[in-house]
Amino acid sequence: MASVLAEDEVKQLIHDRRWTVLRGAVARLLPFQLADLIEALEPADRMLLFRTLPRPQQSEVFAYLEDAKQNELIRNLTNEDAREILAHLTPDDRTALLEELPSEVTQRLMTLLSPGDLREARTLLGYPEESVGRLMTPDHIAIRRDWTIQHALDHIRTHGRDAETVNMIYVVDERGHLIDDLRLRQILLADPHATVESIMDRNFVALQATDDREEAVRKMQEYDRVALPVINSEGALLGIVTSDDVLDVAQAEATEDIQKMGGMEALDMPYMQTAFFQMVRKRGGWLSALFLGEMLTATAMGYFESEIGRAVVLALFIPLIISSGGNSGSQAASLIIRAMAVQEIRVRDWWRVMRREIAAGLVLGAILGSIAMVRILLWPTREKLYGPHYFLVALTVAIALVGVVTWGTITGSMLPFVFRRLGFDPAVTSSPFVATLVDVTGIVIYFTVALVILRGTLL
Image (tube, rainbow, N blue to C red; front, side, top):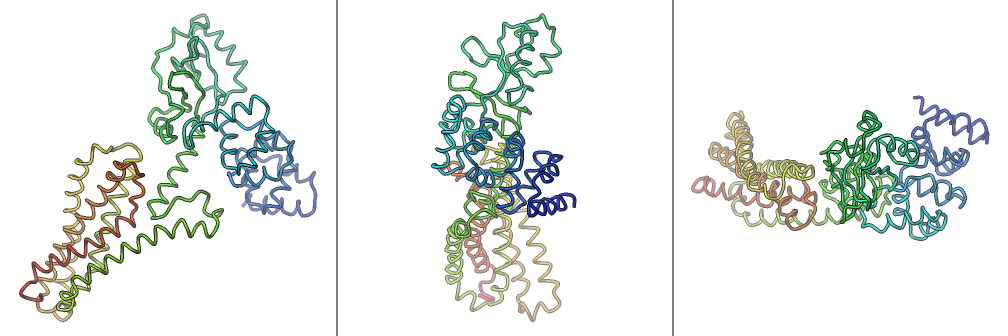
């Protein structure tokens, strides 16, 4: 409720042009709260409120804004205001902003940077997209192994204000190669007269600048670090990646995978900021492909047209059969894709997964088959509805469910392995894709079972 009242109050102050009162009203808000408030306003009011903020506060708030809102504001700021904001952004945040902007805007902003910041920006932008190099910041603290603890503490006090974090301190040799990382706690509790080398264990983990950013997410989770060093191919320390950047990456990657698993291309921008026709294009391609796949279901049913004509009762269970197979396949695909994403399983584990899913499919199919059989056999008007051979119909449905559900789990669990082996994102094997594939084969399995069991009676 407080945020709604604050938003209404701010809108009224902007409308009344009471800038001094407005500046005082928002001064008590934290940067992230003020960023939320700015994002909730209309574009015109958003710009007016941002311009009323003192420049130091502008830089703090700007870092918390969504990418689209940052782009909108930076386009409308004067060169002097833009220069001030860019100067106070951390190198990784500055890189993220520059790579999202159109090239002409990026070029304008690059001319506003100081020579040192410009060199940093060009270096970071030179790394491949979605690489650790784009995420890292060169603002870190490095010490030498032959220093005393007191020397190291003095160095930290002198340079700590400019560092992204002082929780982790990095030890480098004479050539700048990383040889260890130390927690600040280790240094604070050590004897001031001891050397840095005396508290080193040379047990550290690092990222390569060319690594995919997902590797940063995995290692940050695995080793429970607030920051990870980034090195080049020769082991020289280039910078660090911090947990806040990794959290942003984890959220972006999870969003992308979820959207792909929904049967569409991943969106490049948040949902409400994606243009309508771009949204249609992202969804239409996959939807059309799935529709063409579903047409094969009609083709399969046409192949069994004579059987359906002689035993119309079989058509009653087609939705039940194909939906059960699709659901089981979607379950398996979701489990395997997520397990791959968090490195629980790898391509070499495919046979172990297949054995588990075959067993799971048989059990799950038996459960659904039993439910279907009980439902048919105990239905009060079973003879009228299913005919005198209702027991054989029930047996057909039950056995077909076992086969279709088992096939669904096998398909859903193995397709991610196939796609990963071919170098594609396993998330492309989305639930709709698996369901469409299983629908077609489910029809074939169902009527094949029916031909075997009902031959000489209904068929």
